[in-house]
Every structure is written in C-alpha cells, then in structure tokens.
Image 1 (cartoon, rainbow, N blue to C red):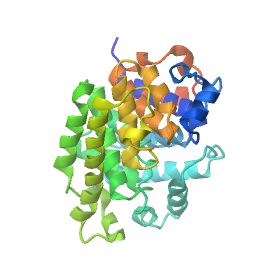
Image 2: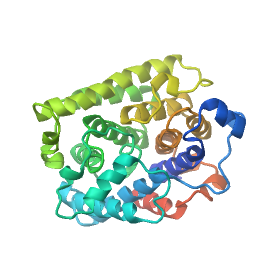
Image 3: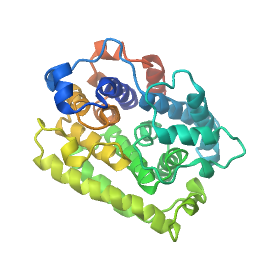
Length: 335
C-alpha cells in the first residue's frame, strides 16, 4: 500500500497539536507532574486542536479552491486564502488561544479594499505562519518557484517579517522532501543548501511591494535578514542532532518555538531524534517548555510526511478533531 504522505502529515500535525495543546504554557516539571513520564503521554479522550490545525485547514481549503481554477498563481491563491482567514477570524470556534498577530492581521484583511500587504504584520516573526504551511509541501504538481512563492505568500498575509517568510518556505520544503522520501539523516544539510541558494531572492511576483513596509534599504536586504536567522538556527539544529540527549527538553537546544525559526528547528529536532518512532517524537515535542502545540504539530507533519498514514495509531486518529476534513484533503493530494 502507498505510504500516503499527505494524509500522514495532516493527521500527524493535528495529533501533535492535540497532544501539545494542553501543555502549551507549562514547564517540563509541571507537564511530568500532570501527565507522568513523557514517553507514556496519552492523547486526551477529547482530542481538541488549537488554531494551528484550524488555520492549516483554512490554507488547505484555499489551495484546493485555487488549484481547481488552473495553475497556481498569487492572484488565484490570495483571494480564497484571504476569505478563509477572514472566515476563521469570525468563526465561533476561534477560541483556542489564537496568536495576536493572526488576529490583528485577519481583522485588517476583513476590509476588502485594503491591499493584503497593508494588513501584514512585518514586525512579527511568530510561529503562526509556519505551523500551518505543511499543505504547500504536500499539494502535488507545484514547481519549486510556486511552492516557495505560495509558502511565503501565505505567511505574508499575517506574518510579514522576513524570518517568518523564510521559515515558512523552509518548512514547506522540508515537508516536501520527506514526502518524496529524502533520508532524514541528510535533511538539515539539504535545508541549509536551499537557504543559501535563496538567501537574497525576493519574489516580487508573490510578495509585491511588501518589503517597502519595513525599514530595509532594498528587497534583497529585507529577505536576507530572514534567511540569515534561519541559517543560524539550522547550524544550532545540526549541532543539537548530534549532541542532545532525548531525555532533555529540546527547547534548551534550539529554542522555545514562539518565533518562526525556533519552531521549525525544535519541531525538526524532535522528529530527527526519533525518525522511525513517530509517536515518541510527538510525545517529546509535547513535553517541552515552549510553544508545545506548535512544536508538536510541526513534528507530526514531518513524521507523517516521512512515514505516511500508517505512522499513527488508529485509536488516536479516530478521535482527533477535524479527522474527516484532514483525511479528505490528504486523500485528494495522495491520489
């Protein structure tokens, strides 16, 4: 049976989110006191997700709508994505501790005459953009340019800081590499090469004049700031993979994950510590002192893309919130 990487990644993302959501604002001793040994953490009976999964589904639906209209372009993606984000903003279910940046930007996006660049929060590099970007690494048929552009655009609608753009691009690229079967042992090196290649590439087609909202002297300077922060965290990650004990809090090595590049690195670290033990990787990610649900949802996306739908226990996937919607998108893209 094919491994179904899209289904595996989307379900893994939601499972990580549901496992980490109850522990998000606790330190590790508090989590252990409540949950017991981290290697035995259990998914809550009501496996509710946070805004991380809600916004992943919003992006997934927008991608599906845009793809049905023809080749993916900035114009075809921006309209349905903006509508999905505004619908999420107004939803009564938007009560899962959403991030301030997403709320601020989506409130501005409700004004239809406002260019999206004017809604973008160019000072924010919170993790709220790269925790939802996995679908762009999973949807089939995109060129490298489309994938990178779409990953950065979906970030820019809310999080316009260059590090948020670069981290979203890197996250989508990592998901795509793992879904295609890239050996996890070589993943950090591949990501570092990708970041170096793209370091001064500002994509005017997808981002328009976003950079002018910053204080940078030019677009290449603007985007290079983001890639340089991502390159620095990839170097920390490469060292951590070789030296960190799985028994210590991963946030101590690669950051607490409240900002984009740290969420990417710490989510990847948890996956790379246990590349063939996806449930253990999720438990490690959820038992962290930082942004546990975002870290764990990224870990779940990486593990699911690598191992496929069979990575996850049936009794977990059967009760995770939004299972049917996630499975429907996964099945569509796996086909």
